[in-house]
Amino acid sequence: MTTITASERQELISSSLKARDLSYSPYSKFRVGAAILTKDKQIILGANVENASYGATICAERTAFVKAITEGHKQGTFLAVSISGDIDNHCSPCGICRQFMREFCSLDMPIYLPYSSWTKEKDIERTTVINTTLGTLLPMSFGPEDLDRERKS
Ligand SMILES: O=c1ccn([C@H]2C[C@H](O)[C@@H](CO)O2)c(=O)[nH]1
Ligand SMILES: [Zn+2]
Image (cartoon, rainbow, N blue to C red; front, side, top):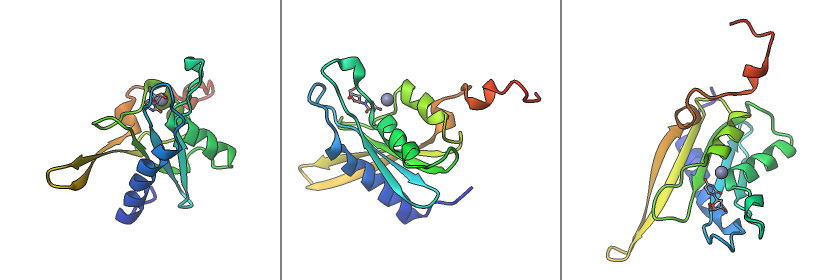
């Protein structure tokens, strides 16, 4: 497993917070940013893109992975993902996005869920991060290898 340095982790987290600015969310007004760190140390951004036909909306996490895959990044080359929402709390990925990531990422891939709060009294912004993994967010999951009929059990 490739190790992620503290500064790479920090840059990934800041990238997901910044990626919220790319959101197109006129209906929910809920901006979400996602950032993926690849094995070759690129950071790929995504944001949620909504639609007047609400069901056609795509989440930030899937936007980022669709970009990564169509830019040539392969299954198993994703080191970590960071996701940031606009609510007054951490933003955990929806079920569809968890399954979408399951296609391309290992279950031990770190997922960071940063939340930045700003305290008027102390005039400081503080970011707290939940560190989890895809396997924790999607236990007993179904993935590509489950379709492999030749697989020995
Ligand atoms: O993890 C999440 C949760 C929600 N959304 C988006 C979808 C929609 O645009 C808005 C409200 O659900 O937030 C994401 O992008 N990722
Ligand atoms: Zn989602």
